[in-house]
Length: 126
Image 1 (cartoon, rainbow, N blue to C red):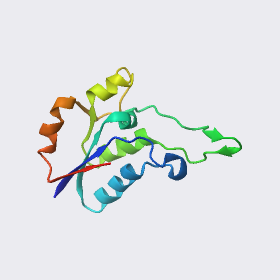
Image 2 (tube, rainbow, N blue to C red):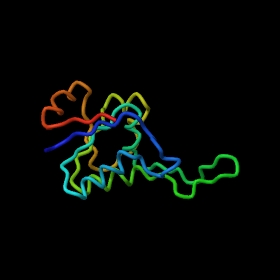
Image 3 (spheres, one colour):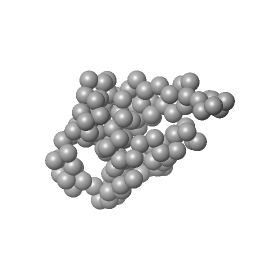
Image 4 (tube, one colour):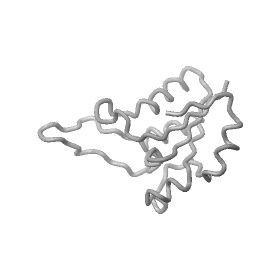
């Protein structure tokens, strides 16, 4: 069984846990042998930006000592043969068109999502 995970909500639990829960579980499931790919859309396309840096994040006296490194996490997924797609229009709408995306992220048009999902047995939207 091959599944496509569609991530639309960005930075879920990254303050408390330092990792996006869905990106983290994708790593774990891939390590256990699951066949998974990821489609980033909406605000989640921000995960594809390579040069993210949340170091120094603080709220009052509290300092985030384990900041999220989502660009690295996406790069590592790609290194595990997980295809990572980003919706091109969402990248442009967020002003990221000139940003350096993680190597290997595949930009697709919104109109091509229906064709993409046909390649999977299951689609999970988060």
